[in-house]
Image 1 (cartoon, protein in one colour):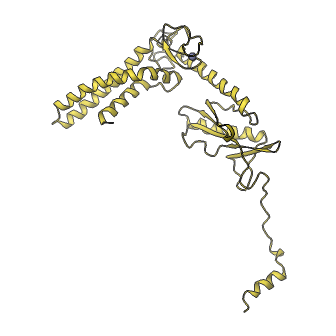
Image 2 (cartoon, rainbow, N blue to C red):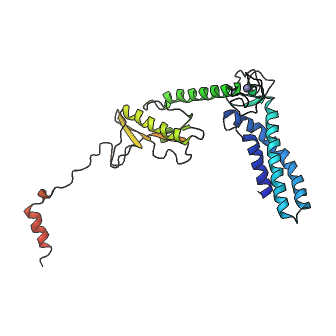
Image 3 (cartoon, helix red, strand yellow):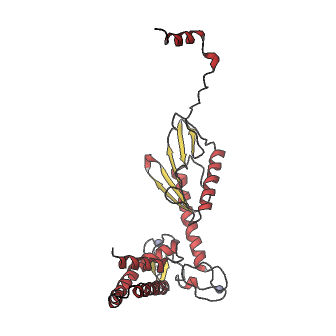
Length: 295
Ligand SMILES: [Zn+2]
Ligand SMILES: [Zn+2]
């Protein structure tokens, strides 16, 4: 990808995603990005020409380009906002659809009355806020779009926790917050994650709280190298493992926990052997030892 294309791609995604790092934001991005990219690519042709015209004056070209990209980012932001005036997002499946629809074309769920643009209008002072804003930029009131967002997240989490009953019945339920995901790998186990959207501290506290819940429910460190990050419990002869050791390897604010059936290294019942005491060495041992030096 050329420098220009890369910079344009950045301007497009920055323009769209500024403040839109949530479920509704992602849905909006799906719709807006392809059209915004097309629009930006057209603008790029003009940049190319402008750059060619002032090729000798390198410094001016660079600052001119920077200004132009900042403008592009702003106009795409405006474009994204304009589009949301005719956009609804399904609260059940997250699919974006046009503002005239009453039911989701993807799953049939009832859609909210308001478009995303309308639900960014402040209920107390009437200001039209940009989409992705949760609180009114003029008076601080909570916007309807924020409530819709919370509702969507709560429904999604409820679905994940319902799945939990089915595929993780041996483990205590996660009650430690975040945006939840679950992936069942059959006999290989289950990957579960809780995302805290940029809050690394909250993610770490949540894992610590869950380890405590596990221990209260009879899970414990076991095997030859016991650690708080690997907890085990035997139920009806089967050993269940919770792996919180590699929790933050992908993403520091997303706690990823592995659940599977597995014996710890050395076995669940491993007991560290007592170190040999010196009084156990008898006279015969000393005689054997002495033999080594006799020839
Ligand atoms: Zn739907
Ligand atoms: Zn307001």
